[in-house]
Amino acid sequence: MRDENHFSIVGTGAVGGYYGGLLQKAGFDVHFLLNSDYDHVRKHGLAIDSPNGNFELAPVNAYDDPRNMPRCDVVVVALKTTANAVLPSILPHLAKDDGIVLTLQNGLGSEEEIAEIVGPDKVIGGLCFLCSNKVAPGHIRHLDYGLITLGEYRKDGSAGGITPRLEKLGGNLQAAGIPIRLVDDLALARWKKLVWNIPFNGLSVVRNELTNELIANPETRALCETLMNEVAAGAKACARPIDPAFMEKMIADTERMEPYAPSMKLDFDRGNPMEIESIYGNPIRAARAADVAMPETEKLYRQLLASHLAI
Image 1 (cartoon, rainbow, N blue to C red):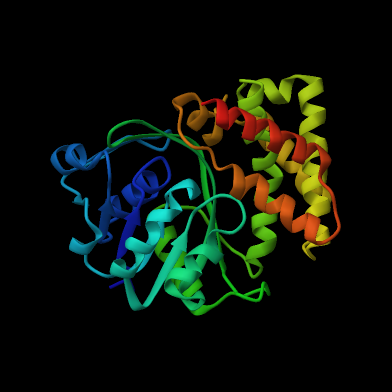
Image 2: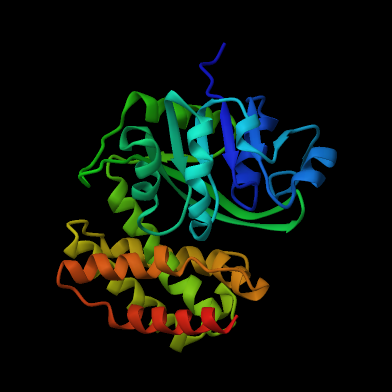
């Protein structure tokens, strides 16, 4: 018998619905906290469309109140960071005393926010390289990729190393068919994800273009590369240098990617709050505190704030 974690999913959308669905499909005990989709998912379950095979799950353990949920080994936070104000009323009900809270959120600062609620020793960070959208209540469309990079959070910002609980969590996720990479330095992994998120999320909004359009246009491709280099400079100033070959890989990966609307563009198009502070504001402030400016990133940040106010 495998050594299984039991999972709670907070935020059953494009990320939580997809990964939680894979976990339940593989036979893990999974409990889903929902908001607007609760009635539909309780009655009809989840539907996942994927190049790896479509599947439906019914019934699922669906809840609209965290107080009715069992405490689980792993609480997966897959909400947008713009919704983090609700977490203090949710997380204390879900995590076991010796449990883990895994945040799959974007940008910088998520682990710190969650550590304030549950304590730093419970927190593991996860970074998703995933093309996935929620297309209807309880209906997730997975387009490409799916890798989760996992790392231990440390309050002092140091590298947390590869721990036994990280290996166990990674093994359980792999058993569900989820590609996993374990890293000893979560902060470095966060900055590396920003190498892609900062150019492509923001530019997709201000230019109203998909990733393939941004990468095919020499002007916007050059701007993407400039933004990537600014992220690398900010990371280096924060003692997290990034190999230039990584930026080249991100460009090449995007060229191969199916035409994709990043999550920030989807939020903007739907009139929803965008994750501007976690993806832009927090990295800019971290770099500035280390005496490094990110001028093109700051310009994009201001454009996004103006767009956000115009919604």
